Every structure is written in structure tokens, then in C-alpha cells.
Length: 313
Image (cartoon, rainbow, N blue to C red):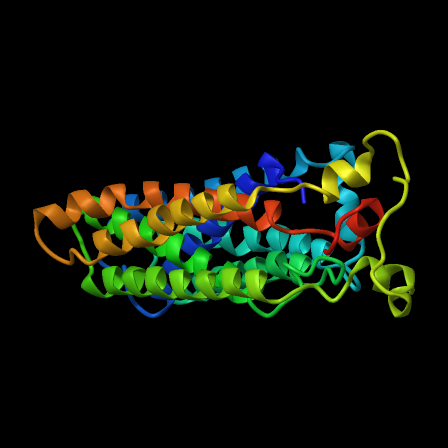
């Protein structure tokens, strides 16, 4: 599939934002952060919301008619895209309540904790809906598998934990539990992503030119003449190809930047060095996730490409 920059930025930024909001909400709802100053809450909730909003705005740039984006909310019963949009819009209500209660009024219990819990639950639900948009597309073998949804959730938790850990250090309240969680999320992310790449490499798509045409019983099917003499939308958007050697380089970059480097940083649980490391850790992590997202789209092949000469989807 064509790796559109707007969608890559959207999935990276919104995932990190929802991860940050979910963890902030969960810790607050459990009684944590009660002694933290309002400025910390302003940064945590504000940064998470800014990443989510920026990601959502970026996602509309991929639409042919962005002014019709609101129509995506009309098919909630049947479309994961509509569910994602509805959940994203709904999440802003408890986010506003959480921000107003904690940051504006300094409240740390009662309804504010309920709002924090609602923020966490809706953030997780929105990330799940985003992942299911791709998981539900049966014509794309690289997306319609059991690895996609866990990867989305873990990447959101990892980037969110790294951002929250950095904020905690900057506000002079480092948490070994939070740093340990970020380290665990990095390890889990690397493990799940390796499993996904192994699946992509080792398991062939069920669709071939033979199954697509129904002529597989006659032997190997190959294209005699192309259906078009020039490029078209299907070929541009669904027939993107990335060279194997380039894909391997991008995988290494994504693994080192997105998981290994942040994990080494998160392993520094105490001391002045830990504060500096925790502050810069989200930078390589987000760069690595951008590379991982690019590959997620570039390595995906729609079964429609079989009609344009592809040997397999």
C-alpha cells in the first residue's frame, strides 16, 4: 500500500497521545499523582491532547474531500473507521472534565477520578478501533492477522509511558515503577513486532492470480497483457512495492530506534543520568515508530494488485 505521510503521522502521534492520556488517567484514578502540582497535569493532559488532535487533523489530509470528513461518523454500526471517529470525539468530553477538575480546580478525588478513568478507557478503545480498521481488511494479508491489534496497543502504551516517564523526571518526581513499565513495554513491542515481521515473511497470502481468476486448476496463471497501459489509482495506492533490502534496513532502524534505544534508556532507573536519558528517550522511540508505521503500509499488498501482474498478494 502507498505509505501516505499523513496517515503515518496520524497513527504515530495519536497512538502516543492516547497512550499518554490512558496511563495518566489510570495512575490518577488509582490514587497516584495526587501530590503532583497542577503544572504536571497541565503538561501531561495537554501534551496527550495535542498529539491526539494533531494526529486527527493529519488523518484528514489523506482524504480526497477533507470537508466531508464528518460523514465518516455516520456508519458506526458497520465501520471501524466511524467507530474510531466517534470514540475520538467522545473522549474529548472526559478529557475536558479531567483537565478542568485537576488542573483548573485542583481536585484529586471523586468525579475527577471517574473522569480520569473514562479518559483511560476511551483512549484504549480508540486505539483498538484504529487497529481494527486495518485488522478487518481481508484483502490485505499483512493487516488481516492476529498480530496487528496487539502491536497497536503495545506501541501506544510504550510511547505513552516514555512520554509520561520523561514528564515525571522533568517535574522532579521520577518513578521506578513507571520506568520499569516503559522498559517492559519496549521489550514487549520488540517481541511482538518481530513476530509480525516473521509472519509477513513466512506465511504467504491465500490469494494468488490462480485463486483470483479461478484458473488455478489449469496450472500457474500469469498475466498476458496489462489491464491498463498507464498508472491508475489502484496501482498507485494498492500496488506500492518496497525492495526487500530496503525493507530490511528500515526494520533494523525501527527496531534500534523504536525499541532498543528507549529500552536501554528506561533501564537507567535512578540518578542524574536517568533524568537526562528519560527526557530524550521519547525522541528515538517516536522516530522508530514512524519507521515502523511506514513499513506497516509499504509492505502491505492489496489482493487487487493480482490483476495488475503481481505474483502474490
